[in-house]
Image 1 (cartoon, rainbow, N blue to C red):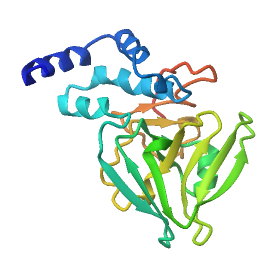
Image 2: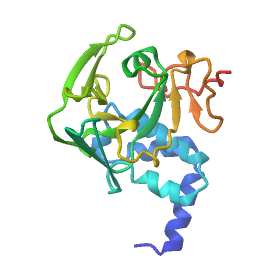
Image 3: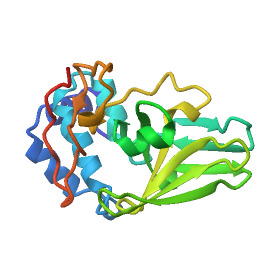
Length: 218
């Protein structure tokens, strides 16, 4: 193993590498990353260019399960408990009309995990399947049939991902969104942050290509 100083030097060198180099590194990752969720991981790694904090970089490099940090949550009545392990692939705030209607709020705060990093205990969750009228794909909402709490959602487009809603954690103080999506339908009274990427629609298009952040909604 390299000395600590050597490892730190290599990490800093990678932090300041061009995005294209990071994408090349992604291409050499283990085969299980060659899945529909890969564009999210490419976006996460590309953002490393903007991070100067080495500890934050080291945390992000463990995002595919090597980091064993665990967090727990539950539904309102406690019949369903869940546990997530590791750092989320993305933490996104979604302002689309569908999320607004489903949550009864202005947006949802979504943590994207590989499904293998999420486990449920207690009463088996119920599922409501909804076909989006916008893109025609299915969304499978996970909820408690007793109290009605929505715990998360899985997507037909990204079948290996499990989304967990931030408000269902026992302690969500560690959750820090790294992007806002569908800001074109964000509430008029909402002020979007200046230090987080905001996208007018989705952060990737139908072909899986990363999109550029949009101008702030004012």
